[in-house]
Image 1 (cartoon, rainbow, N blue to C red):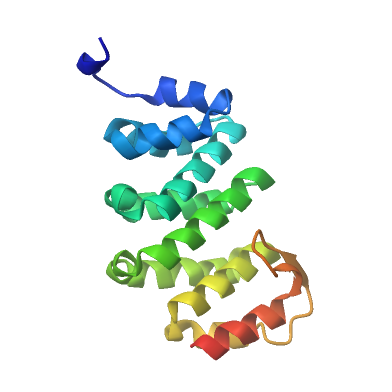
Image 2: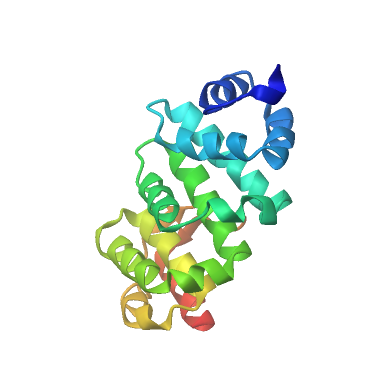
Length: 186
């Protein structure tokens, strides 16, 4: 009796991810809030493959049905996603970057609500992140027009280190070039 289904759908969603049933999962997630909640719960899984797949599925939801998933994004969710950008697992890290970028492009009103916190977090990424995390932070700073970080961005203009980001045209790009691009947008 599916209509009397109570509780978390975490197990069901994890099984669908493990069986690569992404299209069916997306369809179910659009219709069922508990499925969407389970996807966000799985961001805390100990299995990096599940976390990466959950990130990818949420990204697809943001891109295909932004209104359906918008209510699931809050400060804790943003913190979780930014934390996953620091993952040592490249599948998790790249999918977290892809989701964060999709959120930035789609939900400007939410980002304005959390602007002060985002400025702080991206500033920390510029100070303590690895070169790929710094490149990503520079890219997001430019996209969001976070002019309060322009001094920190300028510090990277002459950096020759190359980064690999999971975006078109952002493979083997100098940090300095990303910083210049960000400054043009500020």
